[in-house]
Length: 71
Image (cartoon, rainbow, N blue to C red):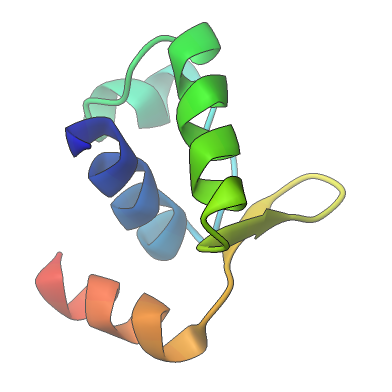
């Protein structure tokens, strides 16, 4: 979905940091926190991201590099 694509792009560019902060959500046009949580769960189910203690990370570094080139 578009929200998943935006979330992936944000995680790649911000290195997963502060994805729920209001400034990041506005900058990247991400959905509200409750919807963003569902988007991130869907991406985790697909194996595209994983969660560390306080960040989300892209699973595959080649995929991350590709996302950064798109940005």
